[in-house]
Length: 266
Image (cartoon, rainbow, N blue to C red):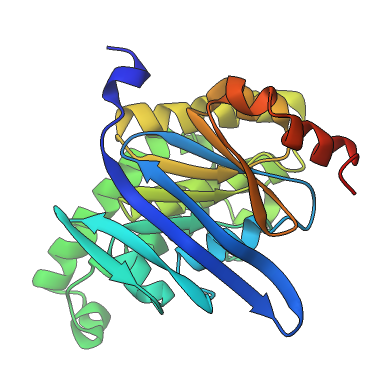
């Protein structure tokens, strides 16, 4: 079965979202949707509002106008001021443009932090580490080891993250997000700063995550070759406004998008 046949119904709906910081309008009445199992790219020139949109989607920022609707557990839920903890509990995970890992901790320990919301034992039980706490940690450890194997980082599982090259740190951050078992994965420039081989590896893993786990992916990426190769649909922002939305082929042929990237419109 090809990927187009696997894409399902809407899982996320962004409706008329506006976000401003003082007099700076980061987002202006932006609307788009995301479908289950698709890879949805958000592109645009620097300062277009891409990271601001991801921050809205996982509750870091609260828009002044508009709503976010998410389908979770078979029911739609509407948000105006969702926080990050609530977003995570509903199955939204996130990686960041600037790597946000615990540099002194091993790869294994970093990925284990992605299981925090799934831990049910009390702090005291975890400190004593007997009975239920021990069984729970072993269960979470098995889940984490599966993710580590999937992303092919077994050989560095005991290595402190701060000693790893940049490309592998990006992969560890992806592993931590996957350990939370998200239904919606937000990737903020997952290939930034990588060489060609590292980009090819990351593209493969993003596609594999989407296919193997069925995870819906929303990604920001500046490399247009990557976007056109792996995305099902693309939404284009420029100065906080949506100027394009459609398949990679449709967006590539959109004159407003061409003008924005070439600087003609400004």
